[in-house]
Length: 232
Image 1: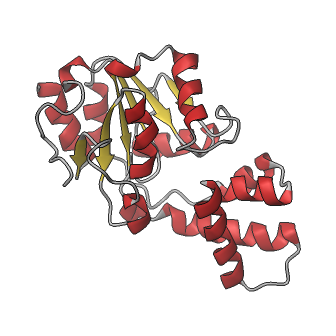
Image 2 (image 1 turned 90 degrees about the horizontal axis):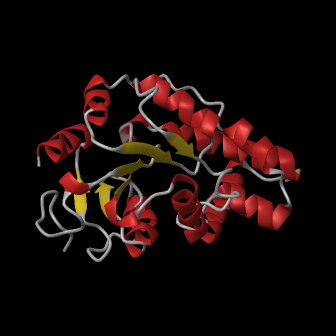
């Protein structure tokens, strides 16, 4: 059984958190915005055009899903199996319409009120993250964006990206909290000693690895949960 959003004695007390680490997609904006639908369509288009495959769009999506399951991201699969240069893929895939993402002044206020440092840790690129952050109304709120390039293109949950994040920004894991929609990405964070918060979404693939041993808080709505965290 997973802990409730206010389960006692789970992780470090929220009042003692000094570094708040946020995932980007489906975490800082609701999963119902469904930005991945357009991103996935662009990935499939890239696969067909770059690999020169005489396959249907459905076949390209099947390949995209296999890359994601086998390697953590479609990009990683393309790099390892087809030698694709990563920046061309990332630039193409992230040129998506952000209009489904609404401004969120409640979340902006809640994050502004958090004590300590705030960072973004994403499998996307810094440029894309900055566009999304601006759309939400969070520009200027984060000390840094730790993106897939900073992770040497090794996506979460590969532990090396977490180690690079900690070293680059001088993070003490025991006083840090990581917020994610993909449960499996919280496993390395918990192993390092971070407190973790899982933003629960309807996506089945986001639930993989949702075990109580590495999820300290379950979050239904991020802004109210952060507001409550500040009051503790």
